[in-house]
Amino acid sequence: MHQVNSIVMCAPKQRIFETAADLEKWPTFLPHYRFIHYYERGLERNVVRMAARRDFIPISWVSEEIIDRSKLEVRFRHLQAWTKGMEVIWTFAETNEGIRVSIFHDLHFRVPTLAPLAEPIIGDFFIGHIANQTLKHMKTHVERE
Image (cartoon, rainbow, N blue to C red; front, side, top):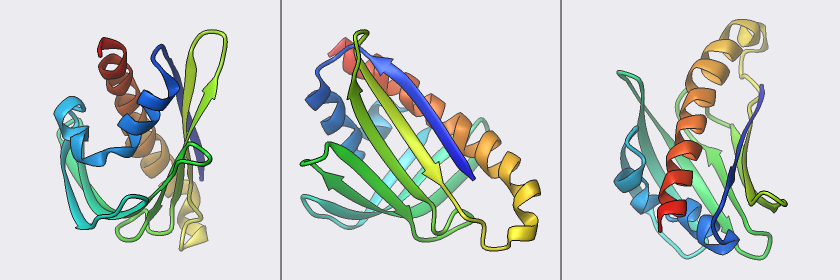
């Protein structure tokens, strides 16, 4: 499964990057996020339980977050749940319109024969929707500051 969601934000690139990297604050401006719980905390690496909602459906997962300030990327590797092994990369590219923030999700299903069934449910229904909501609300937040 390969999923890409992106949006253009009109705010300084560094502010957008730091906002994306600061998971602790996400539930304060992302209404679909229920909580972020830290298991390990550091300047460049965190292990967190993230919990969000897809409409009325609660979901949660454990991720390792890597904050790469040299590349201006935020990377996640899902450690548990249905999406175990998924790699997620946030990128921030300058364009004439603003900063294009993209979230790339890559997952190789552990049971390949179920991939045709699981991809539309996990990829489109859950990941695609939540990523779009995250980008939309983050855009509102960083453009308002």
